[in-house]
Length: 427
Image (cartoon, rainbow, N blue to C red; front, side, top):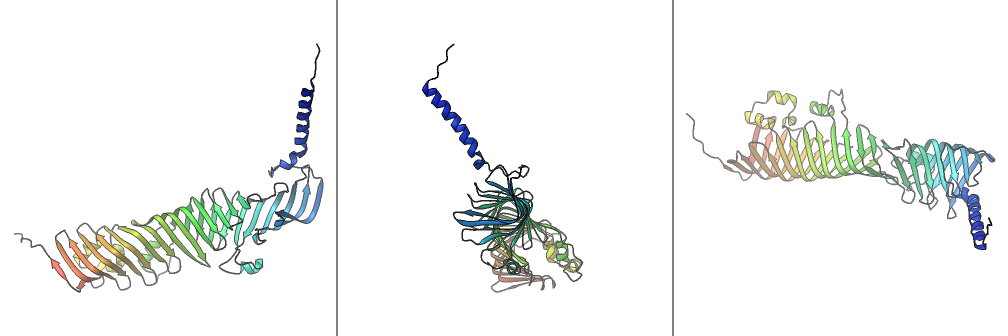
């Protein structure tokens, strides 16, 4: 059998072999595998050195390492006993500082830094660029401490990624992403997309996603559930009603939350389908806020309060000695209140309901512009076109009504108008 090779076939074969050979030569340039389990025979080894990474002719990161070596891949460097290290933004400002880890991989071709094996670091606010020691003592602009199994900086995206057991500590808040977190080095904002849990004092907050603004110590959260744990206390001077509330947990859910820390004080703003529940009591609204200093609470927009009774308004002693039968009955009934705004001031122990106030019980309705409950004085003050309708028949209209729970009295003032249906006497 005679085999004939045409020139065209020889040319195709040579081209194919050349392509295979070229691919074999340049393959290390595409090897971006940073698997910590990979083992490479050392060809060059350097001790006690600093490794720096550049992008667009700018220093992007640098790390100290006890040992650095390369193997078969000329673009891949490995190091052990890493730290300290630092990552910079486009302006050369340090964003991630004091990076320590057991090991590090550096790919100079893809410009990826990957630290792993027990990583710790600090995210720095850009507003306060001073020494690390001064920054740590600066108070409200403290660095944010992070720990993780792995930390990766990718030059192509200018993002720093945290994976494997991530914990972010910002002031009193301990934030644990369920999967991972990433820092956008352009905005200095940490993004958590697959859910998280955050603990702050006696509160546990969970959500679907979170953005942490490192520069301002503000966090934005979506799909929020806040659980406030019971806080038993032995303070004998505390109001027994407050002591009882502390022993019961409270929950809050909302579509969105803004969480801000200022030293030891935190401020919470929530919006979208806000629901607060504790011990059978429920509050609903469009938006609300809470300040830890003074325990100030506000709720706005279609506010609705659902209560199993009004007994919580009375101290245990007052509840035992209450004589007024009409007041006893009113205090025992389930109550629903709607208004435009609710505000509670723990310093003055006052609860204020403002705008289109409507109180409903099974046998009566009360409407007014403003309702204030003064716990110290044990008084309920209703003002602004007060109207009381009982059993759909009897009514009272006044400029204001003061209910004195201690004296067990009602007092109406201003232009008073009453209407009563005459009932036949029973034999």
